[in-house]
Length: 218
Ligand code: E4P
Figure: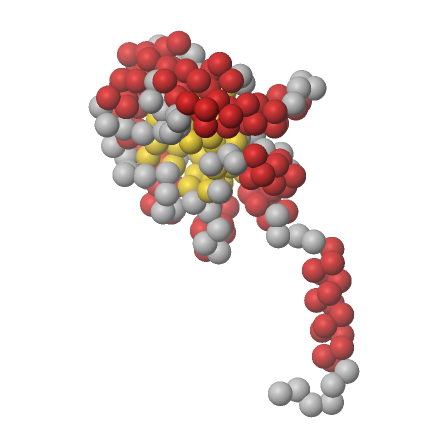
């Protein structure tokens, strides 16, 4: 399973890449607006792409096919790691097809149903991003969607990668792994939560206390 970091924060990205723990990055307009300030967005995207050895999803802002494609072509030329992210709308699916035909990778985002995921695969997307947490937020079963998309893609041999998104806690990631999602994008906080276990802290504390009882340390 590939782990992507869901952020545009370069400090967080470097913290994770420094440990060799992530396989790519996903951004969205909300995440970028949190960190961009008065920075040139293209430069920020370039720095993010250079910081990781893997796909970096960069989202278009337009909502009509023609402008999405124009924006997507610009985003795709920022770096070889760039993957153009488009919303799962009729225009987004058409823009996906156009960008794929032009030789670019596309992540179709804001996916909330199996039927939408089917169309993303039909449009030639490299990735589809079902939003697990946002479905849970409205009392749905977000992980059920990952199950269903996995089954449909496997039944018919679609190669679009399932990128479980809107992940809120480590259990989401573990469940997505068990189901067989291809990738999971997680906020930095969740990445570091994955490493935590109280028995690890307790065990380490015990080892250090016992070691300190020795007279000589070699
Ligand atoms: C996916 O690519 C999105 O950036 C992201 O996972 C959205 O998550 P949220 O629901 O926590 O905003």
